[in-house]
Image 1 (cartoon, helix red, strand yellow):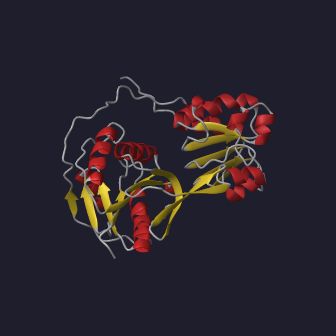
Image 2: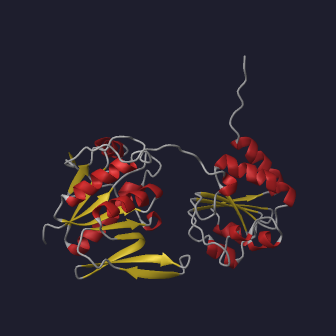
Image 3: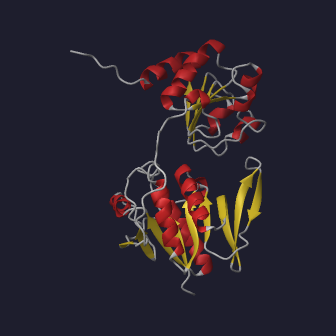
Length: 332
């Protein structure tokens, strides 16, 4: 075993990805065991490590480092974090691989770090393996129906992002590790600043990008679509549809979900009046949680759903809209 190290960037993104650090640690340990390298964690600020440890998520690592990049909002601080992380990587001669999560923030950070260092970026890998000292990343292509094998052609360090959906947490929590703050060698002012922050309207949100997708089928009447879109806006969700919904003019072709449309992997998928053909179920096989609303309790979608509701969409959706609306304020 040499003194080489593998670093895993750990961040719960302000609590939005609470379980992600522990899953990344488990994957980092697996990769390190395959090479005999040390597995170390790195966070953007000691407060992040303290918050993770306070939540019962321990670290079984050979080292846990903090960058000292302060702002709690990772979106606003991304330029500062990238600059400090790149400086630390450049100053670590024993570092071979830097692994980051393939979340929106993690992918942005990885691209900035790789560009600053002039190093290759293996993005959105679903698996990593070793051939001697050669790193090979496996990436999903063709909407997950095929894999592409990629490998850096230059010497390390290499920057990698892993698709968070393939990461699994260990069976038991690990002991805590002592946190050491790294000196980056420079505290230069950030070269960019956030000028404006806005949210894409639900009507413009694509089904591939949304964490929540409401999908309509032939069981939804055209006059109920307005309330489906209102519910989507309240939940910041995208609206999609089945093949039959596209043929019926309920949704555009680019919003079709299924094997003949888009293969999606949202956090929550809500099927409204969709029976669930084999091809449709193939398109949502990567969805984390599925909710089905249908008048037919024997519809195939019910077997895929974690929550199945036997009800008429035209009756239930208005009730959901009322429940999702902000509480009215009464002036006294």
